[in-house]
Image 1 (cartoon, helix red, strand yellow):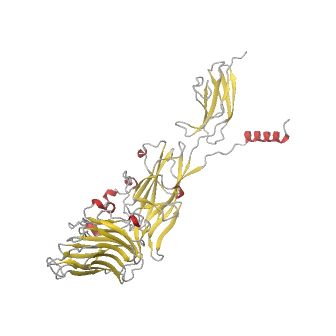
Image 2 (cartoon, one colour):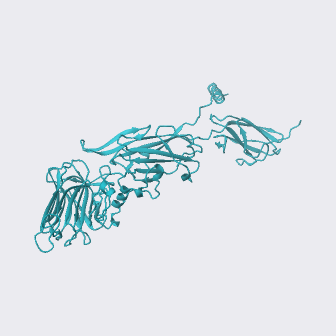
Image 3 (cartoon, helix red, strand yellow):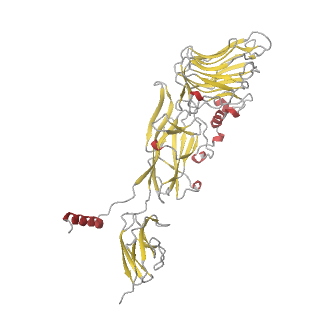
Length: 569
């Protein structure tokens, strides 16, 4: 005899099964990119890199290094072809220096480890003192790193090889020296750079009253024998601590003109002639033995992208965009980021179910600003999360695009749809697979980049409905009648009835049609034309989806069976 409590439980369970139908409407689902999930889903990147020194997890932001994707794709988001952008060309020029004949030495400091610093041109041996550190990409002017100097005895040395421009005993003609400088204090006597050789031959770049002074001692020799010249050029502009500035010294052996430029503007000039003016005999560099370049020694701050050229390099800045000069290669504007911005594209992402509907995207991030001079640190503005234009007062911005389809191939035939974070996406963006793109635009002065910390794709997965329950069969003469309880999913559009003569194999033939039979949105179906005495097996699945096209069906119900038999009238 059953216990009373057990009987009561069975009654309650039966009541709930008959009258309480759970609300199983499809809930919103979220696909997360970035944050702790990482950016492995981002398949194509143009001028965009990952940065780890901004937030707890890596973020995406414009990269100052040349990172063009072989497949491109920028034009689809309104980004100019990077091959026609002079800044992009300069980036390529910087990052492939061994192919450029004018480069004699090229040190980017992007190796992230001081003991790995090297000359990409391969003509100088690099030695680094233990006190030198590697600054990360948040601090670097270009690329992923810079050299960080901590004062006295903090040095990076370049020892010239036999094929270098500054090899011992060489008669030098044209040359250019350039680098980016970020001083911490600009105290008097700080030594930025020097070339030292035998017999007191020197090139010294040091600070004096917040300015830089270049002194060339015993460096320029007359055409014949005679006393060598010592020439000094000093900047007119006072340098601001904790600010990146570009420095370039160039020499033209045909005219004897020595120029010093900061941020593309000529600060001072001198002539290496006997008269000290234009015209007359030109004194040219003649190198002594045991020479080498040394960065730092008495300097606190950072140096990035140190290069020597064996030609005169035209002044960077807007002038290089406006005119051409036959005297040598040109450097373009000194902006950190490319004017055309950058772009990312994810691979096709599987949402799991056909006819999934993308509802919206949500994004969080901010902008990377230049170094905060007052605080002495890089400032990060986390000022965007969630809804509307991903845009900042300095005109840096992010723009998002999305597209979806039912299969992961031929996605290039599907147009991109521009979307705003937090706002409803048109219903036409649906399918099992989705692809996201984002265009990164720098500030008006190209010094600030937006960054993307996380993006969420919110979607309705359109999951197939649950199967019907309590499937019952009743054998008839030459047929079977089936009935079932409705699927608990509110968006169920109908039911498919499968049947056959083997368990799990449903290839039956009968009326009103071969297996499966679409019963529509009904809870019963009669199948005639079956053979009496044969055991048939049945299963029912529910389906949803649009009113046209293939139904989106769910799993089978529990299998049932029945044997049609002829009965007496």
